[in-house]
Image (cartoon, rainbow, N blue to C red; front, side, top):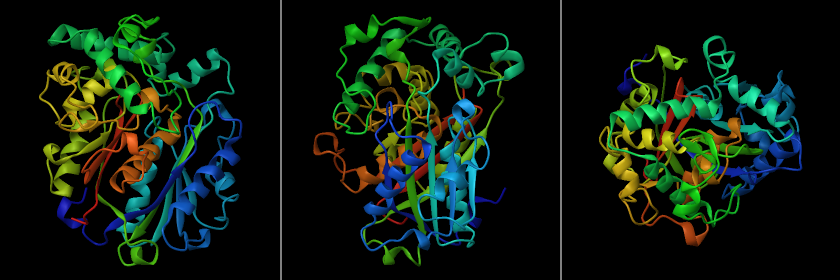
Length: 398
């Protein structure tokens, strides 16, 4: 791996970003991707045409097996990118976070000037039984999925162990759920737009003890698209870019039983350390963070692993509303997170980037704009923590 100070060849900025509404989508994959891509193209401040794109990377788990092969070629041919080098990227729920990293590296290395990164998933065409099967493929097939362990069950084990080790209870997870529903209430693209009281979230239907319905994100259809550009061409497209200050990633054991601890995600910690170092900042400098809250316990872990609070104090962080918009120290999941906005697996990573891009440019709905946001972070996790990508963004180039 190259040392951090070697990755200085070209700076990379986001010049446009767009997505579909998340939820149950009437369009198929081609239509969803076209909607997200056109929204991204239209968001570029100056004239932009698809033929100016050099490459494209699209994250997708290919949920349900509808289009396992040549997914990227199928989608991009309908959005003016036919003939370009394109690739599908798969890293479970972190697929488009890694697609973004691949796009960033293509520009950083000097191989391309304008690159699209995006993601897509069509999840609601399947029966509940088939959904459970496809969600399970992100875990260890031999030791977890075939033994009957579900995705909620995996995170339930992690939550129970955390409550055993630290001063925390399910009430702390309820606070996270309430906060994310509050953040997502005015988000026009969110899957679930409703205010949820503490009592309602606390008394939700039990899914996998201790996780209730209100601890679990919905399965969503959706697509997202981000356009990146090299520093020497940015001014052709916008005078108001959002710079990607760093990109980092790491991995960990897939099966829970192989990990020394199941109350922290080592991949997140390793990627965060490198991302902060590359960007020249610390966790205290981050104004907004889109973190991977597939379950509320995952957000609690993220606040610790990303350095927003000390290890073992994530429950206190949630209890004290320190991640609430315009009230706490760092706004956590201003979009509503996966819990409210939704979780179309392959689209989630770049969907987080769309939110950061619009927040830093003061382009989200006025009722949910984070004040004085200059530095953002996105945190995209694959499965139960086997893969993780982290990106740091800034209004300033460095």
